[in-house]
Length: 302
Image (cartoon, rainbow, N blue to C red; front, top):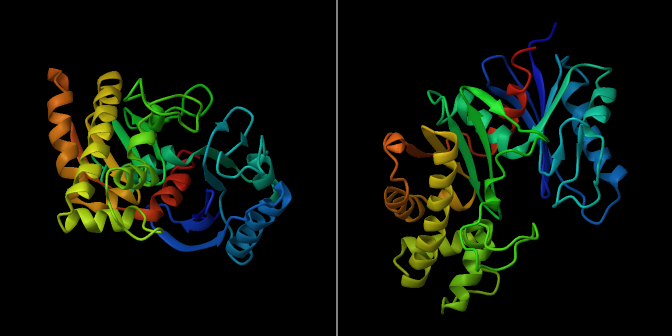
């Protein structure tokens, strides 16, 4: 029996596939763009192409799938907001069929990020972990008492929709004031522009980060505002789940100290309960590999 696990990571921008060994090392990976404006079968053909490319000459023991959500874990289907062609798409069944009936496990991409960091990254010695992705949006996943926690439908850990401003703007989820509306990269850039940041029309969160590092006052305030919202989210989730570790990754998190310094300062104000005194926040280590490593971790007990 092969010791390698096929891992898939499905998102709105790219679809990635990899082979992961029993130690959690990503031994090979490939990615392709997610088709835009295409039908469901066109998106599936990209996934199928990656599966064939990874397994044509290399047997695998099964597959783990990390997908943008929402997902329906009992049904094995996905309806990613950023892959509109897939509504209730039977991804688990399709992947199992492509692999001749081998075991296939499915989870949300936030949970897989948390699992990857827990197995091989910045959360390795944590028992109660929140993996948090701060990028275009804000996502997350929970590892509780050392095990992934998917919840009733598979969508537990959707922390990007913790409400941090009840009077805030409308979110893509249909609610108002979610942390994603404050700390998502494009939202931080929009706020900075509204408050006087002058940059090229195509400037993004990476350029806002560079401006903050260089000392631009408006960019610094934008990161402080986003970091405060993330800290409020962390404090809320930590109090509910009794966390000991939070690992923060994603494009916005790559800003480093301009995000983490105000985040930790705000967290000290918000997380006042005595059992949260040992809560630590660390930058993610695995980068874009976390989702693939975490997807493979879904099959560790098989």
